[in-house]
Length: 103
Image (cartoon, rainbow, N blue to C red; front, side):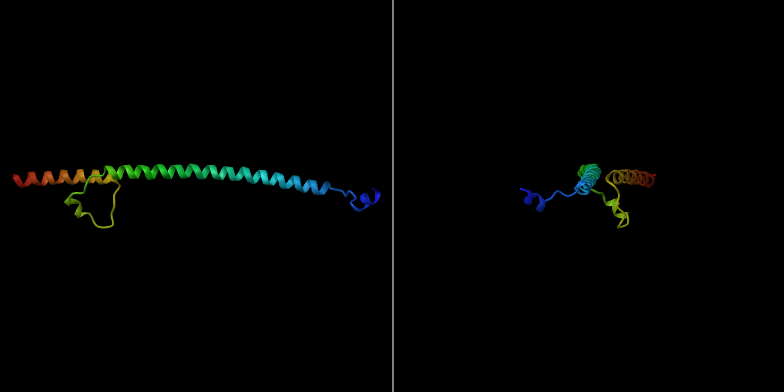
C-alpha cells in the first residue's frame, strides 16, 4: 500500500480547484448573458412578426386601384392607409373638376 501511495501521491490541488471554480463562474455568466440576448431576440422577433401580420391584414383590405392612380409616378409606393387617403383626394378632385365642367 505504501508503494501505491508513493506512486499516486496526493499533490496540492488547490490551484486546480480554483481554476475549476473560476471556469464554473465564467460559464454561469456566459449562460446568463446568452439568456438575456436570446430574450431580446425573441422580443424583436415577435415585434417583426406582428408588423408582418399587420401588413398582411392591411394589404388584404386594400381596394383595387383606380385609373386615376396611373398619374402617380412609377417607383412611388404608398402604404395601404395612405393609398386609400390618396384615392379619396383624387375622387374629390374629380368631383370638383366635373362640377366646374357642368357650369
